[in-house]
Image: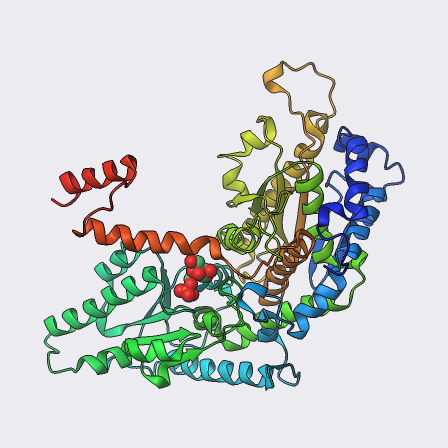
Length: 562
Ligand code: F6P
């Protein structure tokens, strides 16, 4: 916080003013806010354009005085200074005493940024160049497995930030695959139960399969258990194919790439130094797709398109660094969230992309937002006496319409929704008839997207008839939403979209006075799981273990071990 006094955000004058404002404003229905807008300026006032994105915040339950007070809150909470600190490499991750420099991963090569005396930009571009060398070898069909056959399948083994971001982007941009590369399929396996991996192992050829072990820490049991299975599968299947004379070191060398912030641990595991891609402790796992953790993305879309993704994110970073708070898209998005959570008590947030290519976007955002801001302790270690991150969930909007929109329209929970869609789609389809058909489906999808946010806002008044409706057919409306439109889905606009949400999370964390870059809340579960595993495998259960867990273990001993 910039101010020494008062010390918590809820004692700031603007927070107090917002509480009073919310008292008066809470009962105002969204349709009333729109009805007051007789000059039709609401959209212009509450929407922003940046880097190929249009951000419409006019369907939020706020008005101009609300926004003015929220901007005052941002100023009083020191948002501008915090942005500067983030981008310049200040140690914003206090509990781990390090900067959070994901933005440095997308700085152009001619930029400089020094951290602890090292120019991180030079190091970043060196790591990208090393990644490019590996990508090119695989794309040229020059990477051969231990028996000499070219690699055709790559399986990324990672979890959390080492899986969700790369998978989301690789899926979203699959259409950008260059034509002139050796055909390569990229898959993802994350679950520690081995079920995703088992599926691939059942049908892939070990001679032409390469694994990428993606783990910042290189200690994550989920990834290491999958890695161990993959290694033993390769060794035993290659031996069965008659390749018994092949040394295990050669198999590991030719069938594994490691990506981690810990070169020592990669070496201990057996990854050849030439096949180790590095990154740094100052890149948070859920913010890491922009560097070497993005290897699967580059394998799908090529390095040139990967650099376009970085350029899109960098454009958003520059906007974040320089736009005044009132014009700053991530700041505006963050303030809408603060208003909903802390002043309108809306603590459920649904992410609804209207484009099948963004299928994994909500899963990615769940980690980005909830692992970053799901905190209740301030940066000084005090207990936060106000709400922080809402519960976030989502799926493709058109499918969700047939799943949980019933609750959005007629349930009892207030929910804020983010609708995300591209304006232009299928313009690259070469056959005119197919293009016409698909573009008509795109218009159908956009129509649904716009209609849903309108209905959520207005309720059944969206239908201009005066027909009386029984209670079960009424729609009360007043559910706020944000719409983010991409001009079209390209590497650049996707980069900007992700950076928009990353920075939104940071601004909210700044106002809530929490650290968005650590995740201590996941550590104890890992320890207890280790202890529990030892008990399941035969160690004595500690005295006083709770009867529920004991009962579950007994069920396993009776039935699960058979
Ligand atoms: O357990 C949570 C977490 O640490 C995430 O923050 C991280 O993205 C994920 O696990 C994977 O961690 P790693 O990349 O170190 O394997």
